[in-house]
Image (tube, rainbow, N blue to C red; front, side, top):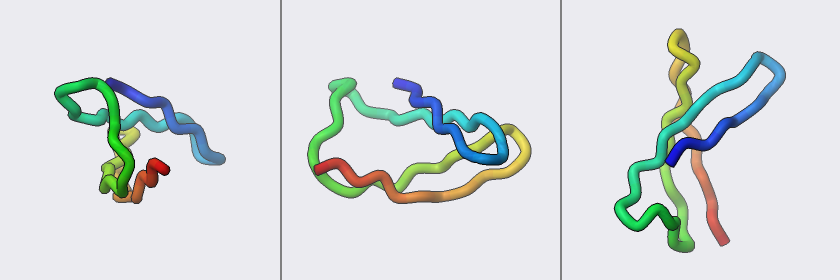
Length: 46
């Protein structure tokens, strides 16, 4: 499953590895990369 994340610096893609292709509630640590820079962020699903 891929999500596109847009910000002021361009378009970033992050890939979420989940067998069920459905995210349960909780806090996930995700890495966002544009091929040059990589950032780690929290994804919170309520």
